Length: 258
Length: 246
Image (cartoon, rainbow over all chains, first blue to last red; front, top):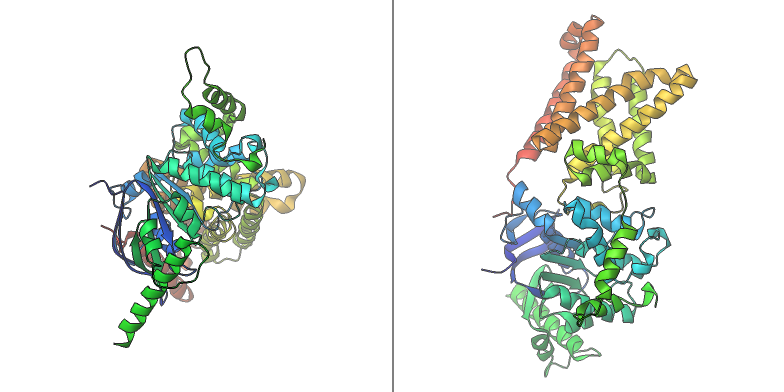
């Protein structure tokens, strides 16, 4: 089996609130989009995949390993690139220092780090800012510094939570090209509520609502979901998103009534 | 072209085109130059720490601890507050015994989800966040001990807190980190550190002839039971079988 992510009946509770309510998912190499409205459970699912929080129940295997055990979790983390939604940084670090710091924490061989840092910074287009303090960068540039630290170790599993937040349209187009390039070698999961990102970069997509996956397919299949539904949206994919979401909610409501 | 208007920009374009015969792959050349120009040479202290801790990442975390200003200030205030209580000579060994727990909680908060902006990111790293926390604790105590020694040379007011709290706790943190590095487990390091502090405090009580009071004083039974319960809860939490794993 070459699925880098295998999830079975995964759930996560915060007190009484069930953020993720029984998700089953297998994802192999390529760019996988995780769509859904705010509060759908995308970030909680991504944080479990990033080994930041533990599941409340269910099974999770990443890169063929069990993240619940110390040794395998360490191996997963060495091969992981993660950009959190609330990406924090150290304002007094330069871009190069920041990327290098996380390369060291990922336990990359020290002799490989300078070249890897230079490559990651160039790939996100921050070459001319490499020696600038993070406090001097704009929001979009900070996001790109975050992407640079995520890809510095040439990860096999890349998890990006709202990566295009703060990027201008030109940067978003360039970022999608980077995503496609990453997806040729790695499993890339992108959580977003911007459907155009998914349409442009993802080979497969899942739609989450209420902590569950209510649709899984290609962006084309999601677009096809709008046919005859008269859903709202400016672009075909947006209409597909709205139609599939409305249908899933109607089905859930009907199930709850019966 | 500036970095603000490109991503996967001209460098990648150049790199993706294989050079022809006699051509120079400018992308690769530039990457080598950039790697050299942006390379940060670790100082002797970082290299030494890297060797001792068997981890360049931990050594970097150790050296960067004071530069994270807000967490540093919060941690230092808590450490000095706990130290002042421990050095006050209340006659209650429990105060001295609990002081490291208070200081540890303060450092964990300051360099944890409380104020560390990159905490979420740090939690997904191969270097254990608990090991990072241990090196942070050592850095906080060691630098404050150095400040305390300097202050002690200037005024006698700093002597008590420096020599009965900051210096011994620096040694305890160093011992904890050494044990954690050898055992490969931060939990083992914390246990070793707490045991060393317990022995230090109780030895002092024995020397002062107060050890039997520590053991037989009935008003201390409840706090002892509470402390034991907390230790039991921590042990249970640390060794529980996690749910949701294969």
